[in-house]
Length: 369
Image (tube, rainbow, N blue to C red):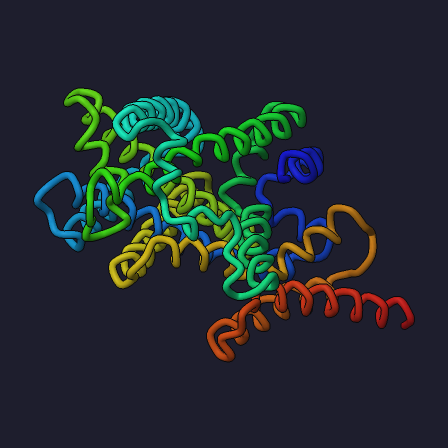
């Protein structure tokens, strides 16, 4: 979706960061509000990856989960402060290839052990093969789809990648190819998760299933290479999850407030911001219980209002700064109250609706005036 509808439209505007769109279309105040709204989601996403790193280390060593997460946070902070986006792109290509090959090999080995994919799926409880969980009704299904879709479309980490592409075609086609590969490769861990109960029995921590299966079924050197590639890939993901929002804070807030900063001072502004974000991400990861919950919250946090406002900004000339303020803040407020205050089934959908109504309503009032 991002590659088809958004990558070319954003790239062609000559933006340095995603927040630049809101300054050009609305005002510097809206720009800063968007940076602040998307910032917690990026930090929570980094926390999910730090926890994943800790789970891999814990599953393949004698370390406790807490010690592994602490080690992960220290490595991530050091890696993120030293490296830049170009380092991210190069290491992602190498590590991503290693992870993909490792998953394919592991999937093939496991499939042969259990009599093929069809044989494995035939022995899985039927309830686990339902593509859509309708326990909360179709509103719940749409909510679960809307969160990753809306959250990903405005994800700073993703947008920062294709904004750095050479051409609009590279930005669009590369994003579409990446999304397709992501979906295709994602089927392998799903298959491994379904096969795990039969092959491994009970696993104390379900988040460690893939490392445990790699340890059980991959030959020694392949196992070491696969785990190393996973750890390296997680480092790259955390790197971008910390660097992209830190760059937005520096470029869209600090430099706007202190325009006379030297290049060296700007660099250190980003580095210190990354360090602060790393500490917060560590505290979140060490106090959480599930990676899944962190990922879901990261996608939903602040994205409803930003998503709606970005659609109006990119594809219409309707509405101005006041509409944007109400939409961005209203979407966030309604989602937070619905999720944490009222514990509703579909707080994100409600946030999208409130954001849309707020934007259109204020824009119509402004037009009449």
